[in-house]
Image (cartoon, rainbow, N blue to C red; front, side):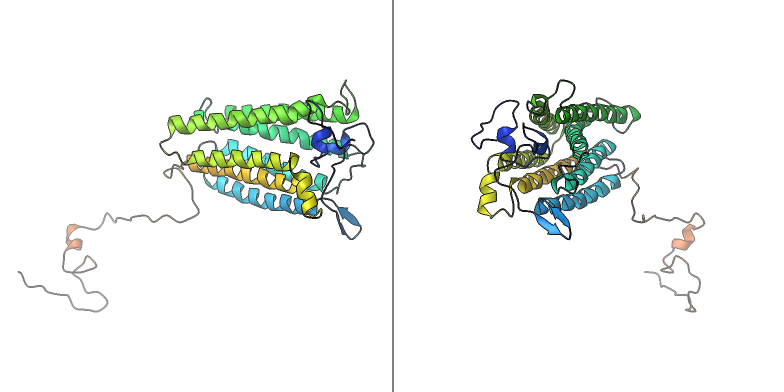
Length: 327
């Protein structure tokens, strides 16, 4: 593939020459796909050659961070949209887990199962963006959150999006059903147009939600930071990946910073959701013991007389009763 390829609609030539995407080894008119001009060096552990070691380490860190965020979300029992946003983070956890095996070539690109796992990853990624979009409307209470209808709509549409996009991906990789790995226009539209549209609609919906329904404007900062991280990740991958790779002697490339910025963007999604949801403490269940005020109905007015600090004029611990002179 020529290094002078230009960005064009429906073509991965320019994109894959700058970023080592998971789909790139399966596209193009060669048996080894479209290779980036510069990519991170490999590391050998025993007999296993691991590609993108820094990026894989970042994926592991992302799994830990997402696990912590899931625990925090689950602890907010009565927060609005709790079950819906959990689905988003569960899906992102699965996507990061798959990325470890695909980015590192633990599943080699030459393996017959690689296209299937790559298609699964592609479909899951598109479903994550769709899940984010649907979560953007949960706060408007079009359908009451947490109900079966709300969860069925979210899970059902995510399953349809993931299945359809995954089938388009595997059809493109295998050159079946009129799809071609040499002209992956459908794949390009899904990965860059569809996902971008989901992000734009989500951001607009959340800005409207904050401006129209909340007195606090601080959550807008979370939206801005999350959007900025996502955009920066795209720019670093497709515009500066080769420059970064050459500057650091192939120890890192744009894929590392792309994954890092995506993780930061997802963390901002969590931060935004956490900042706009308040838990109803009356119905929440916490791990801390509650302090209850116990009132004994057997106590009478005489028990509260000033004759004793314990509410009784009887002997306490062997001490004689105290007598007080009137004022």
